[in-house]
Image 1: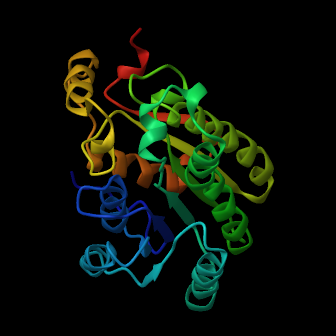
Image 2 (image 1 turned 45 degrees about the vertical axis):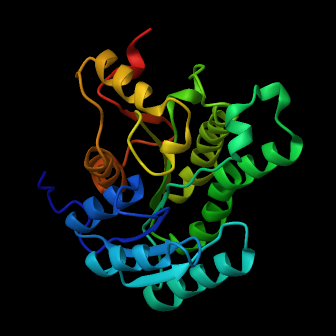
Length: 257
């Protein structure tokens, strides 16, 4: 789909690109097509080559490592953004992780260590990004994170990520209230299931994809490009009155009982 120039010259950080199938990759492509200038990060040396290749393809101006549990890497990233760009207009947080055993186990059996790790990487990291991004958004901006309907209802095999995503959505509401007076909007975008490397770790994921497509009123799943187009709109001035809510991009599946 050809996007209009919604974000001419807007400076946007995209966190979560791992490979060509990542939702974050589809978002970054859409933002670049909409005119945004991009900063892109990689998590570790294993995925660095592919992430860097995607960054070069999209003319990313900043390419740096970011393991969100490493405060020094986060400080270096935002210090570089401040030095090179002098400010920031948007952040896309597209990362989530839980230990495999925590996804498969009943949530009452999830250990404190596994719960803490999932919450730290999938939820609190968004708050840490917001804390560092907000001072760079002197003229306002927008923060986006990715959620899933497992935050609102029980999804088989989603395990501890349901409570974690619920916490993430609640955090978006609080951040929207705190940052709104500074002209900063906060959004949680909720795609339906999308075939990505990370999602493949969920048991019976192929069945979830098929069932979701059959259930959705649109009779199809959202694509990475669909999510990207929505994020481009939310980061643009056309969404100036939108903040704090969950924006579903799932063919309408979330309305079905």
